[in-house]
Structures are given as structure tokens and as C-alpha cells.
Amino acid sequence: MRVWCASGSALLSLLLMGLSGVALAHSEIQDLFHEGQAGPYRLFVTVRPPAVIPGIAEVRVRTEHDDVDMVEVVPLPLEGAGSHLSPAADVATRSEVDSQSFRASLWLMTPGAWQVRITAHGKRGSHTLAVPVRALPTRTEDMSTPFSALMLGLLVLLWVGAASVARAAAREARLAPGEKLSRRDRRRGNWAFAATALCMGLLVWVGGRWWREEARGYEALLYQPLKLAADYLPKVGEGTLALRLEDPGWLPSRRLDDLVPDHEHLMHVFIVRVPEMDRVYHLHPEKVGPARFERPLPPMPAGRYQVWAEVVHATGMTETLRTELLLPDVPGRPAQGDDALGTASPLTQSSTDSRTFTLEDGARVVWLRDEGPLSLDAPGHLRFRVETAEGQPAGDLEPYMGMLGHAAIVRTDREVFAHVHPSGSVSMAALDIARAALSPPPAEGAAKGEMQHAGCHGAVTGPMPSEVAFPFGFSLPGRYRLFIQVKRHGTVQTAVFDARAGGRGLTPVSQGKVP
Image (cartoon, rainbow, N blue to C red; front, side, top):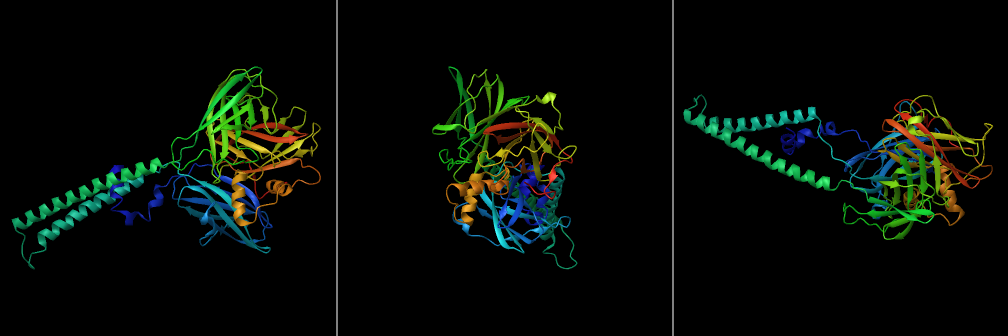
């Protein structure tokens, strides 16, 4: 039935233009979050990219204060000539419930690295913030059964109607007024009906073949991430993780030698022992050859591990790769540089409503959240406070790779993974590309550090803070484990929390100011 409907859609395109939205399904692509400055205005931006390209990206903007009168948004390529040729901007609709929230829908017409430029107009002038967006086709959309039935009915109506019109024309067009139909007239009409029905059937068959070819062509363009191969190289007294990137042949123009540093590293790797998720390792392999990376491992117990690797291409396109790795007991060496590790209770022995995690030195990390499950489609701040063993604010957080903290958020079925910073889930390397088109690049040294710290509400000066907040939102229900990493006294420490998404609980953006 759906093949007939699809093939008939070419004949029914005008009728279906107003109904095409019925066939669209809800996107399950994880949202992008960013909190940054548009001049004096602080904006919390959520972008839901489309899963089908061309498609519509949903953009939500919330201002920190109520002095913004209007918000305009426009999509542009992240780099190249198109990044300087801005079309007319769309005016975002202000929420009737929250006067500081705005919403807009933007068409992204081609796959690739895009940016959404957001201009806030208010009492302190007009200022712009650019947010990188990854637009990739990840699936095809199927027609719902009711919509398929509607299309089939319209196709049959058109088919029979056209044949009936042809029969009437051949049978009665030559008759004089009042003249009766002869047997020859009826025969001529029946032949016209049959010939028209046959021609219509041929058109439907040709349309079906065209539709299938178009579908196959689109499926060939569906995004295929780089393949990640992981191996363990045993050495005396230690072991090494060897990673290799492989191109699945998705696009001829894809490159493996165009990676750029993000937080000063070409690759960020998170390794979690599964299925209990009781060990986590945040490593930064170094490039040792074309598409090859290696890193000495810290001491690790034997088991099966899930590996996620994040890389950023020179175009600003971010990719998260995944694989699995079986390890024996690894003697290893202590973590070096920005590498970090953490331990936690097995999933089967932990609560889904954890609030406090005790660090090795007796200090603790407290998750500042509401009771119950976390809300879905309610972006806000994941807020954490570091306290001393006596319950006082620790006040000793140090920058960790340019940020006050890093968070890895993993659904326990491992189908959802997000690496989030206090500036959001957008990579800093992509943000640098977007910012470069808006203003001159920052000066070397301290200025660069200040730009990265801007994700934490300004450069870190004076007394060190005790709290860190991550802009985020849960779009898919399920149980999640959160790995929160902060740096104190020169050491990276990891706190682990569990929660279930699908209810109330996430602190809304409207409540309080992020430290």
C-alpha cells in the first residue's frame, strides 16, 4: 500500500503540500546546548537539529534578564563565503508564559557544519551570539498508517476519476443534444476508460520506481560516523591504548588528517566499564601516525569497556565515535596531565536519586536538584557544589582544561552519550570558528583563557568558586549516570550520580543565576 502511495505522491504533490507535516516523526537527535554572551546579554540557547535534511531546526533562547525586547535568528554555514552572506533573519516568538523565553524554527537545507546567529535587541543595544550546529541526515521518515491510507484513497479517487472523465469524453462528446447513446458509443467509452486506467497505472509504476531510486539515493547520504578500532598493547609494567580511525566511505570529501585541538587535545576519550559502569577514565591519546592515536593506560581492572572518542574536524564538525574493548588486568601507570579516572558503586547497587558523592579526600560533591525524576524537554542547569567534609563550601575549584568542570552524561543502555562543559555541549573548537566570523580572534595567552572561562560566567579571578553548572536537558527517557569532573589542589576528581529522566527535577534556567 505504501509503495502505491509513494508512487502516487508525484501526482498528488499539490494536494499534499499542506499535509506533508503529518508524515514527520519526532526527532530523537540529542539537543545542543550553549550558554554565552551576546554583548552584555547572557543567553541560554537550545537547538534541536533536524534528523532529515533539508529539515527544520528548533531554536529556543532564554535571556538572563528581562531587558531584551526582540530576538532574531538566522542560519549560516559555519565557515566559507556563505558564513558572511546572511539572509533575512527570522524574528523569534516570545513565550506567553515566560517573557524571557523566545522560540524560532529555521530551515537547514544541506548537511554539514552550520551556525545559528542570534541577535538580541534591547535596552543595551543589539548584540549577536553565534552557536555552531551539526546538521546531518541520520534517518529517513516513514509515512504513518493513517496518512498512507489517506494518500491511497486520494490516489484511487484520482485514478478512477481520470478514467471516468476520459470515458465520458469519448462516449458523449460527439452526441448532439437529445441524442441517445449507441452501442458503439458505449464501446468507445469503455475503451477510453481502460486505456486511461492503464496509462495511470503505468504512471504509478514509473513513479514508484522513481520514488525507490530517490529513497536509495537519500539513504546513501545518511550520516555514517567514523569507525573506531581499539586495541590493547601490553608492555612490561604497563599497557597502552591504541586507537585507529577508519573511514566507512560515507563521503569522498571526508578527511582523517584535518582534526583540530579542542581544549588543547586532538581527541578526548571516555572509557567506562560495562555493564555496571563502576569505572570511568577520561584520557587524551596523542597522535602517533595517520589516523592513529595512543595513550598509556592507568591501572585498570579486567573487564569489558565501552569507549567513546570525540574529535573535531577543521570544518567545525564534531564527531563522537564508539567501540568496545576487552581488557585484562592492566598494571598501568598513574594518570598523567589532564587524564582522570573515577570509581563508583555498580549500577545494580546504586539509587536512581543520588544527591551526594564523597570524594577520596573526604570532601563531597552535592547535586543541587529537586526531588523525583528529571524533566524531559526542559533545558536548564545541572548544578553541583563542592563542600568540605564539614559541609562548608570548599571554594577551591581550579580550571580544568579551561573550564571549571567537565561532565559525561551516559544513559545506562549506552545509546545516549554527551560531553558537556559549563558553556554547554558545543565544542570550543567549533565555537572559535563561529566567533572568528563575528569579531577578531582573541589575543594569545590570557585572553584565550578568558574566552574559555566565559563558559563559566567570566574569567576566574579572586576567591575560587565552589559551584559549577552545566547547561543541559534530557530529551529521551531512561536511567542516566553522570560523571562530574572537577580539579582541586592540582588533582582531577570525579563524582558519580544516578538519575532517571522522565518527570520533574532539573533546575530551570529561570531559577537563579549560574555561578
